[in-house]
Image (cartoon, rainbow, N blue to C red; front, side, top):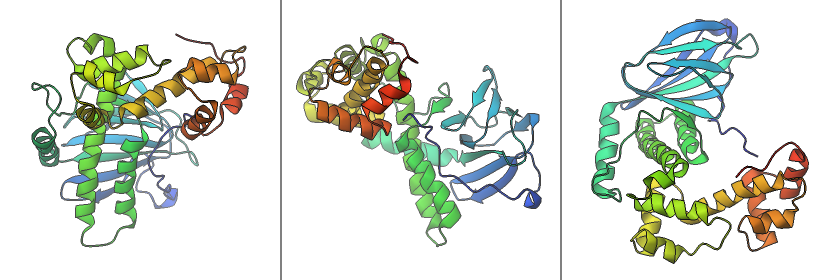
Length: 314
């Protein structure tokens, strides 16, 4: 139920074996990237960290306060990731780290050559919907809430680094890194298009489709009409939607309906059945199974847990 999606849990090091208690580093180096695991076992402030390459970081445990150039400081928690540009200084506080309760984070330093290769391949073989669009990593979307698809790729890189012992190890990591770069861009696109589809709807067909979905989420969605609205065939619409965001239109509709159902379930006088049909589901059995698969608990358990604690938001 909205659990923080964090990468594979790396065992914490024995304090007596660490070189330092603040940002102790274990590194796994490859041709195209370097995986770093950092641990901090005591409170610290203003710890500076910088990489020559683009860096994707993800929290495993504990809490940091991040200070990045020209950005407001923010709490950095498990279930979240942060991207940082080459040579950008990170200033980090560790307000809660202590013996037995360390802060742990991974940092993937990625070569520009691998990033450029991946972007060129996508722009050539899987061009964006609009001619002027290009695949790219958006540095302005730097603080990311993890999704399962993105973290699955990070998990593979960590597990390969810690368990694989073969001459093809570099190849496995290289393949996983390319997928991770794609998943990262899809995650950024999800954030942009789903948070402000109305503003983009007038000049982007996928944003227009998302805007329609969000406004008709409690009604029956006709995907053929949706594809027509986006000026694409059904097959092309599904293909481009999945390429851009990492999920199909149907998966997006389902997730939005679950989100709406949760708001209804928090209303004290709203029944499970009402929440089901008010959210666009046509079948109570399907609603119950889909909700449980997405949230890990049934709608009735969710309602009991949040009874009286939430408020319905438009």
